[in-house]
Structures are given as C-alpha cells and as structure tokens.
Amino acid sequence: MPSSILVVDLETTGLNAGFDDIVEIGIAKLHLETGKVSKVFDQVIKPKRDYDRYAWVFRNTSLTPEMVDDAEPLETYFRELYSFLANNLVCAYNAPFDVGFLRANGFDCPEVAIDPMDICTNILKIEHDYYGYKYPKFQEAYNHYFGYDGYSEAHRAYDDAKHEAKLIFEMIRRGDYTFNN
Image 1 (cartoon, one colour):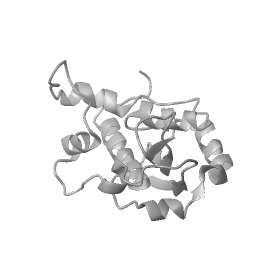
Image 2 (cartoon, one colour):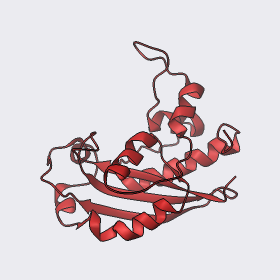
Image 3 (cartoon, one colour):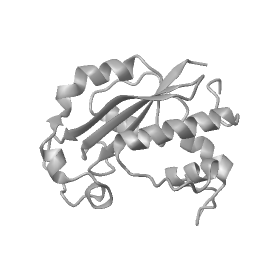
Image 4 (cartoon, helix red, strand yellow):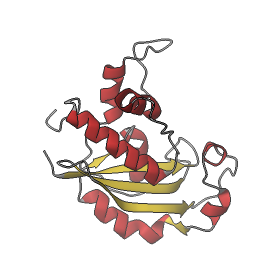
C-alpha cells in the first residue's frame, strides 16, 4: 500500500472534456496510515475559451463567473500540476470525468487508483430505473459512510477533494477499499 495518494476534484463548465473547460482544481493529499488530509492545490482557473456564464457550476455553487474571469489560466500552473500528477498515485471520485479532463488538457496521470465510485456502486446497491445499480452520487456515498452529519457537498474543488479523501480513508478503514485489486 502506498503511504499517500492525491485526491483530485475539478469544477468545469460542462461535461465534455474535449469541449468544456476546467474552472477550478482542488487536490488533497491523503496520508493513508493516519487519515490526515493536507492541501496540495486549490485554484480557480480562467478558461481558455468563451464559456457559458450560466453553466451548472455557477448556478449551483459559490463559484462565480467573475471569480473565473479574474483567475489565472491553466498554463500558469501547468508545471506545478504536472509534477504532482505525474509523480503520485491519483484518485478521484468518478475518476473517468476528472482524469479525462486532466488528460484532455495535457496532464499525464500514469498511476490512477481504483475509482471509489465504482466500489460504492456495489456497496450501496442503489437501484437504477432501467438497469442494475446506479453510480452513487458523492453525497450518497458520503452519507452511507458517515450518516447525515450536516455535510452537504459544496461543489468547490478543494472542499470536495478533502471530503472525498475522508471518504476514501473511511472505506480503507472498513476494508472496502484496497490498493491490491
């Protein structure tokens, strides 16, 4: 088992990594022996293209178009982020989304841990309307492991990454998540 992993969360202007832009990146380092979470990266990002100022992220979070307009472009942080992502085991809740956006923007993530959302699918067993079990939303997984403790997903990158790290550690503690699958 590694001693730590980087838990990554992104906020974007949409769902298509080839068309939409990253507007916020949060990275938390989870120390696997202690559960300690530390901040690695937390930045709002200025998109490289015109973007939908009424995108979901702006209507459902505290992130505003003005914050994004005033931010630095992704290129400003490229070397720093590349160093983190290329040299550490990376994990994300719904990894295909976050890692897909990172890769579409030129980042190498050679070591990606098992997606905790996939594991939670078979643990929570939430029926899908049309087939098998649905992928649980992060809030559903969090509530399963911690109960309804008052936490509500902020959909801000670092806050989400920090709570995803907490979830992963609890899954490890309970034996639901391992690194030798």
